[in-house]
Length: 287
Image (cartoon, rainbow, N blue to C red; front, top):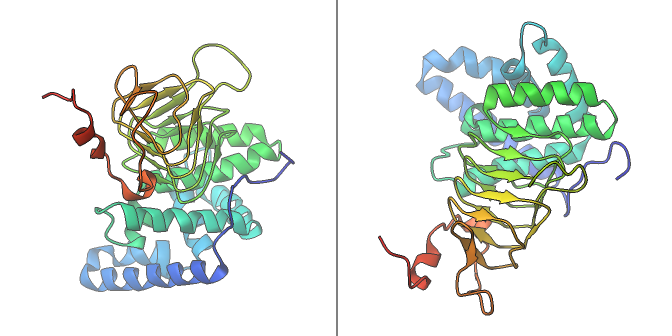
């Protein structure tokens, strides 16, 4: 991959999408400031005082990730310069906001996600770290990675490649290794690990296709492929490839319907968020 290139596997949303979402965020912030005066100053400083989405996001991330030796002003400048110069990064952030708003019933507004969803914030900060990594600014990328892990309890190596429309739901304990690749419109629950199987130093982490849903506590290990539109059940341990549009459940994971003729999923699980449709088809599922 050429230096500085951000990896996404499909078209980016338009500037109109970004403008519409930013308008929604500001309207929601005004409404919340009026209804809850205790939050008015906070909402003004993080959203309403800013002229653009990238300025608001950069300010908020800079404050979240700052430390006594990594100043918020330094981080703000770093984030803003990167978001401003790369429309693909902003488009990915907008797609992630839309993903949370549509897929998570607990997400009551775009502004709620922007301000409070640590999975969303960790993902946007990772995108900056990945950009730095591809530009050979690796010490800074690793320092940012460390702060993301400390603050959000989400550990994503800066070399990992992540698409857009990503939902890290709850996000606590998510670990994504160096050579992992995640496609578009993927939903991942808390305590998911995309890890290696030993000390190999080459390509050693999972490749997650578009539209995949990975349930809470699932562990996927090694340089294996999870096909487009597949579903990984909560708590599963996956060590071999999972075909597209199938469901893998258990420890070790096995395909619902059997390896020879696995049951096929009609909906895209990463978007439908249906975690339990396999139960009616799994005849030996017993309480």
